Length: 142
Image (cartoon, rainbow, N blue to C red; front, side, top):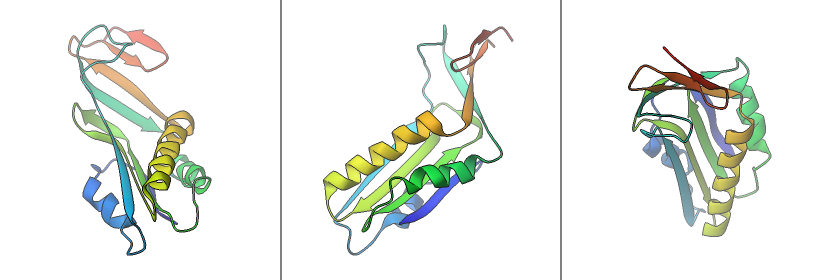
């Protein structure tokens, strides 16, 4: 059951995602939190912020992507941030509960990998020296 699939500018609450997937029939919950880090292979200096933008249909697309991972007895809550995020902020949270840990781990990972590969959300990386780059598109001097 998909209990949450959202694209939002609101800071992500890990505890709320875990609460969303809580179920007396679940013996396991797995959670992934993707956070903004201060470095990246594409950056030449310190990363201080990411700016995420999304296609207007991103939330609908996220819901469709998560449907592929939906199974009986599984609860899924996933959200992706947009807007300006500082180092340490959560960019994506995915929580999955199931009767057994293997399913929770596997489905959580599959959802995150699919979202990272297919959700139309793009990030602009801002470095301490003012340079910026769209991840995958190259560097621009600010």
